[in-house]
Length: 454
Image: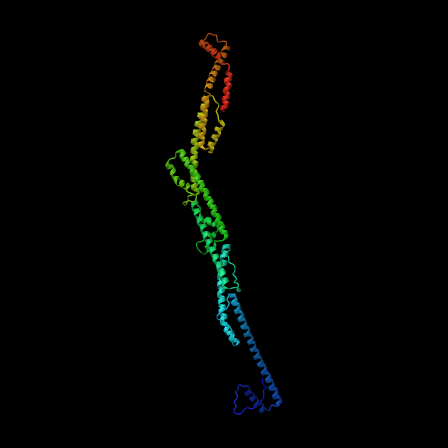
C-alpha cells in the first residue's frame, strides 16, 4: 500500500467525500489553516498509514479464513459424499459433477445438491433398515418368550441394498417361522378343546394351565404365544390328554365288553340294555374315530362301571346258589356211597373266590360238573364194595347184639316176648357164622379206595 502523501488536487478533478484522498485534502486544509508544522504532519500521516495497514491485514486474514473454511467444507462434503456412496453401496451418483471447476463457492454449490440427495437417501435407507431390523427383533423376542424388545442399532457403515435384502430375507424366514408356530399353537388349542369336550373337561382351564395368555382373543396379544416354552407345554398337554383319552376309551371298551357278557349270561332284557346302547357303539369305534362331546366323561365311565358291578353282584349271587346246589349234589353222592367229601379244600377256595368276585363263572360251572361226574363215576365203581360193607356192618351189629344177649342172665326167664329174642339170637348165630374170613381185607380195600378218591 502506498504511503499517505499530501497531494495537490488536480485541476478539474472532483474527489468523492468518502474517499481517502478527499479526507487527506481536507486534513491538509485544516493543517494549513492551523499552521501545523511539517514534522507533526508526517508523524500523524505515519500513524494513519499503520492503522490502514492493520485494517487491511484484518481483512486479508478474514478473507483467508473464509477461503480455508470453504476448502474444508468442500473437502468434508466430498468426503461425506464418498462415504455415503460406500455406505449405500453405490459406485457413483449421476447428480455429482465429474470434474470440479470454478471458484471454491461454485465448486461447493455444485456438490451440495448431490450431497443433500445422498443424505436423504441415507435417511430413507436407515429408516428401511430400522423397520426391518425392528420387526426381526420383535419376532425373535416373541419366539424367545421375552416380553420387551431390545433397542435396535443400525450399522451406518453398511446400508447397501444387498445388506437390506439379507435382512429382508431373514425377516421373511422369521415371518414364516412365526406363521408356522401360530398354526401349531392353533392346532394344539383345537386338539385340547376337542379332548376337553370329549372327556368333559373345561378347555379354558386346560389352556390357562399352559399359559394365561392363551385365553386372549384373536388380537395382537395372541400372536405372542409362540415361544418354545409355550409350544413345549402345549405338546405335553396334548400328549397327556391323548393318553388319558386312550385309557378312558380302553376302560370303557373293557367295561362294555364285560357288560355285554353279563347281559348274555343273565339274559338281560332289551329294555335294560337300551340305556347303554350308545356306549356299546362307542366301544367298537376305532381309535381314530370321531367321538361326540361327553363321550368319555368320568360320569359316563362310572355309570357303566356301576352297572357292571351291579350285574356282577347279581351274577355272583346266582352263581353262589348254583354252586351250593351242585356242591349239595356232590355231598349227597358221597354220602350215599359212604365216601369222604372229595375236593373239600378246592371247594372252600372256590366259595371264597365267589364271595370276593374273583372267579370266572363259566370255569366254575365246568369245574363243578367235573366234580359231580368224577363223584358219580367213583360211586358206580365202588357200588359192589359198598353193598358188601353194608352187609358186613349189619352182621357186625347182629354179632354185637348176640354177645349182649348171651351175657344177659335173664335171657331164659319166662317173660312176654322172650320167644322173639330167642328167634333173633338163632338168626344172629347163623349170620355171624357166615361172616367171611377176609372181612378185614374188604375193610382195608374200602379204605384204600377212599384214599385214592381223595
